[in-house]
Length: 406
Image 1 (cartoon, one colour):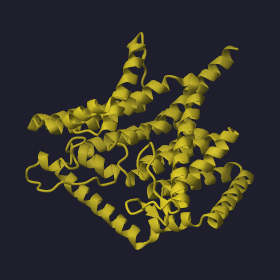
Image 2 (cartoon, rainbow, N blue to C red):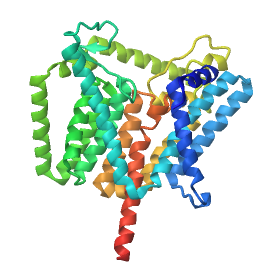
Image 3 (cartoon, rainbow, N blue to C red):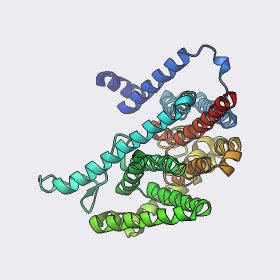
């Protein structure tokens, strides 16, 4: 990581936070090292959805440069460049790690381990504040508390970001268990991750978790009814124990979903969503340019006297910043993931559940958060299940070739 003094200078110059600059530099170093060690770049191969995402990136770059050339506003250019890197760098890292298909199980282990560490952070900080905070006389006035339970930030980010990240890792663990990897590590991880999602009190993550578990149970009911009922009984027992030992978790989440306060929050999100859609009509075809839709929209169009805020909706954000053309290109990218692996997705539980995880992430969590385009940390999220999907396919192909030769 860069020294703080260097970070401060660059942060003021290009308007970025220290952590964001650190992440960009770190990712660029990893990519440089990888490309430096490739003997022949012509040997690289791309599948359909990777090509479609590359086309989406080219479109985003061209549209952003066009906006800059129309204004020659260098502050706009820096905003565009940073947000363009948010889309590019995770894709490049995904591509790098997908080449290491021999060690896909190792990659999965470290991803799950990272999820466990984040879940432990949630548990420790939440319960530490509740149990010891009052005893030590700490002030809670400036903390985000629900009945004395802290909505904690973690290494990944805010409680919302942490909740979505934990949901993704939980989904990956559940898929591993369903596909026969019933190790003690995975069983403990599934409980730890599942419980920590509820401790983040994040509506998008909790509802996505419930959707995923619901469809998982439907698949299980069809394939193995006995295991379905066993799994259902285990869930009921765990929920009952938590409700008796620590009822505040359910009280807090009830308040997050069903009270007047939550309704007010939902209304605000709807207002932001409709405002964003309304302004996207002015940039219907090609959008404002990536990174320029929030706060900068008044700098692009002098007729607009106020600045929009984040709509907390990825689909509305894409419509505003990339237009209908960019939004359709992004949907094509998601659709071609299914096309690429359609036979496996239809006939194999692992790939069916991995695509379900991607689908829920894009089309459900995307209704609540702008996680793909708003932050470098969260833009990695969508590529985690895609990396596991591709890595698993490549690993199986390699194993079949070895078995055939032997």
